Length: 466
Ligand SMILES: Cc1cc2nc3c(=O)[nH]c(=O)nc-3n(C[C@H](O)[C@H](O)[C@H](O)COP(=O)(O)OP(=O)(O)OC[C@H]3O[C@@H](n4cnc5c(N)ncnc54)[C@H](O)[C@@H]3O)c2cc1C
Image (tube, rainbow, N blue to C red; front, side, top):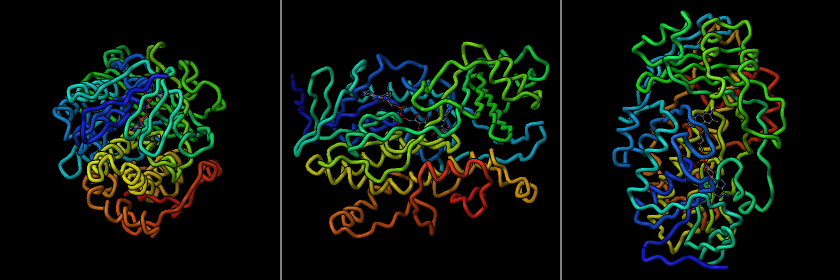
């Protein structure tokens, strides 16, 4: 077995596993802080199709994420030029009756909320990482992880690759998670899958119902709600694309394939008899551009760091989110900014403390944003129509200030000493990156799944959506 460690970089060398949003953003943040970073990615290359494991469509970049991107050369400027920035989100019932036309925030603290093409954004972040000198190994699947007192690393094709620390950003199917927590814990079905597609706007020209969407100057964000189903139509005017997401009941087990070509006729059956506009838009979907994507998630776990302290999980590997949170990638960016700050401050000599501080700073916040995704979906699928009649805001997608107007890097520098204290003395750490007065509660996927069949009482929701 060969060994590969050498670095001339005195700050240290970190391996990042995975070139999704979490891996790329971590690589950039650690390079910004002076570390040598090598990214190991199983896919052969990154294409404008988006992450090797995610298809090309759309992603909301909250201000908490665009604030992180603002430090990355022209990445934010480019993303802003290519993005949709709808000023309203309109929610309809399945017959097309308007329930709510709610304003969407432009941004928080001077940082925009963007709706980006997933592939273009990822390509631009990748180009920036390359320009900083991040090393990439594509087509390299990590077979196993090792962590020792003075180093950690991975085995790829029999080669032992060492570093001072490893950030495992290997996605929701993370193999590192087993190494870190010591048990195999399979991702769970959330009971739903989502038809996803992105196609040229001009394809809506053929139907008189959808044709007017070509002429709108405004970006369009519309949602239709039915029991156990919701459909989203997005028009990204800047890049002349249409995105449709249709979340529906999933009947397959998670062990089976989790991303399949979608069948257009099956999707149309799901919305049979719905508002003719969304049906017409769906009929325009090119058959080869539809994916049926299984929505899977995992219980929040407190332990993200291996026993020796030199391997940590990040991104979906640590905290997979449902799309209705609009926060999975944003939380990955926050992870990256946090890792950059804690490793910067504690240095390669104390990577185990840095990673444990990272875990402490991040766990309660991400547990809540994960739960928020389920809560929004529940409001949309098991809608309390009496509550809607009293106040249509009940249906709003939450954009709370504690979440969106947040500076993850500053928080990490500000609260690092408290977290170190709490670790060394075994005392409680009180998070201040959750809503004021919020008291953390553990929850599990099982707890949420039991509630799928019934409406939740308003006090069950932990994230206020006004
Ligand atoms: C329909 C949908 C809509 C969404 N919308 C939003 C949104 O609007 N806003 C938002 O913020 N988030 C959104 N999300 C969530 C967001 O897309 C994810 O949270 C984010 O992409 C996860 O990034 P990641 O880097 O952690 O994981 P991934 O993108 O899965 O990357 C993991 C990488 O690790 C690689 N890898 C895995 N195993 C190995 C190995 N053994 N060796 C080497 N490489 C390996 C994979 O090939 C992959 O490239 C959405 C998700 C879905 C499904």
